[in-house]
Image 1 (cartoon, one colour):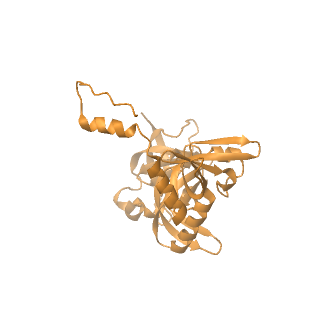
Image 2 (tube, rainbow, N blue to C red):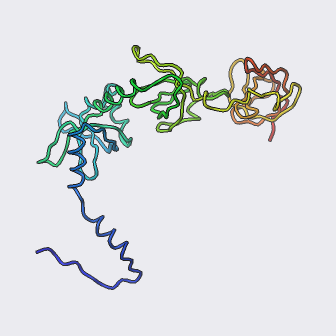
Image 3 (cartoon, rainbow, N blue to C red):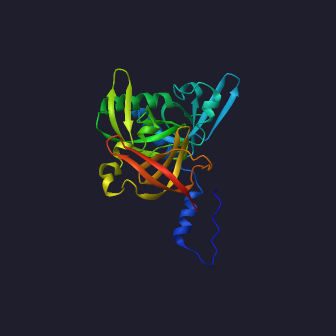
Amino acid sequence: MADQALTVLVEGYDPQKALEATQSSSLDLSSDWQDIYAARQNGTILQGELIGIESPEPDKTYGIVQVGFVNGYLPMQEAGEEIKNINQFRSLIGSKIVFKVTNLLREQEQFVASRKEALKQMQETTWKRLKKGQDVIAVVRDVRMKTVKLEIGGVTVKMGAEEYDHKFINDLRDELKVGDHMQVKVLSVDSEKKEVKVSAKALKENMWDDIAKHLRVKGEYSGIITGIAEFGVFINIRGNVDALAPHLKFDKFKKGDKVLIRLLEIQPKTQHIRAKIIRKLG
């Protein structure tokens, strides 16, 4: 006979909260298994966090994903074409990944999953739908100083810093992190070579289009140093507009410094401004 629940009078008692507490104390595995069965039968792609990895044998490594309270096992060889070793596999821990249910281990109350199969299905669909001129959401998968690796529906795309913004970008790692979402425009698609070019800059307002309304030659303006190169200093003046100034002989600057500059030349067609640093501000 099941134990009887104890009923007592509690100060601050809320029937709704009590009901939620009762429901949360029991695991509804039957509902989870219904979702798993449906995904297996219909070939549905699921998403879930990779919560850990296990190596029960020297030559066997599995990732652990969950559907509700049911554990699924993802063999490392099914983690994706880009996963070549254990360190790359570990890098997925804590991330939400896609997977397909490939086998049911009902007696062990577990299932087997494949991220590789899910990505393959996503890629096939994406290549059919991807067209030049489309605006799509991309997710950041890796960020380097001058390039970012994006994913669009299972398709990996590399984008250079020059396509991120109209302004000068010294280091993309200061702008983006893994997991960020951004909207990009598809510039070209080659389905045979499996190549896609995208641009986030193409969807951002460009102040160069009416630069004459904002800046004047011989005008003096405050700006923030955004990059330092051998040939000069980049100073952001307004929005996505940067000026390039030569180094000063006796003053050294760093990224983030606020400076006063004088504009010497504005070339709207080439989107180039030549300037001179007057002094540091602040």
